[in-house]
Length: 69
Ligand SMILES: [Cu+2]
Image (cartoon, rainbow, N blue to C red; front, side):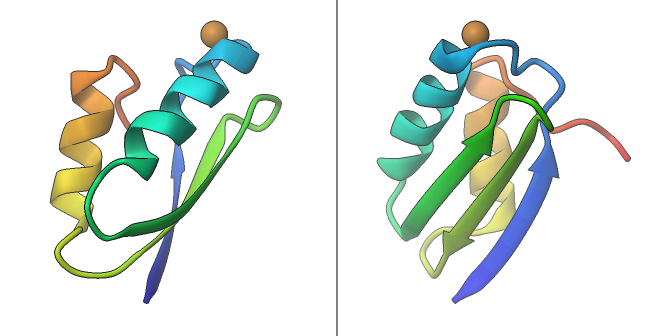
């Protein structure tokens, strides 16, 4: 299992948190998702077939792209 933490600057309310957690949670291989409204961080535990590319692609697709650090 791998854990990644991303900053997603588009998170602005609880609805955003819910959308991210629901959509990412449906990606095959994603084990858990925790999005935080205040810090705008998203923590994801995953295993294959999920990978960082698929996770980032999905976040971009639902309009919550990962912020460049
Ligand atoms: Cu929102």
